[in-house]
Amino acid sequence: DIQMTQSPSSLSASVGDRVTITCRASQSIGPFLNWYQQKPGKAPNLLIYATSSLQSGVPSRFSGSGFGTDFTLTINRLQPEDFATYYCQQSHSSQYTFGQGTKLEI
Amino acid sequence: EVQLVETGGGLVHPGGSLRISCAGSGFTFSSHWLTWVRQAPGKGLEWVANIKTDGSEKNYGDSVKGRFTISRDNAQSLVFLQMNDLRADDTAVYYCAREVGSSSYHFDYWGQGTPVTVSS
Image 1: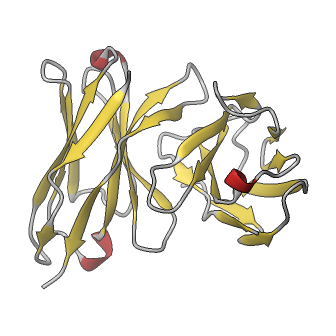
Image 2: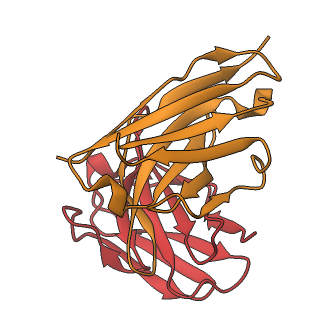
């Protein structure tokens, strides 16, 4: 199966900062990479699909890029509600896999 | 409004079985693949299984293959996860999610989750 590795595992930042989270696939997955945000005790929420397409209702300060094996999620001008855990997920293979998560803390 | 509601979680002994369900509403249930994702306490997300619109294709994660079975009843807008030979490391909150996309499949709606605890 395809392994997804996120870095860093945790990240400290401040309101107004710009942060970048990286996701690396163990083999090429083309553009088939999605990003989710999860807050404690809640179900995950889709942010970005197909590497860079913003899900409806998601603020434009979130953006994604990459192709093949290396992908990034960028959050511009961090807001208090952005402090959460972020996961990447590949849908290239029929066995989907998630990254281990990146916890974004104040 | 799209809704997914999981039910059926609970406490089960190691080696036991449990079937959890997910009821969909607010969308054309039979037009979507559906997925189960789990999250062990304090851990990350793990994809478990998915099922095609008509139930003709199913995929499983390596950790559950041969023990778990996904199925669906489109007439009742339900998807099920039959879990057999349960182990302590199957303890998790189990979420169902709707799949969308024409190529990069992704999960746009999720249920609130149902907790499963495997313990003696």
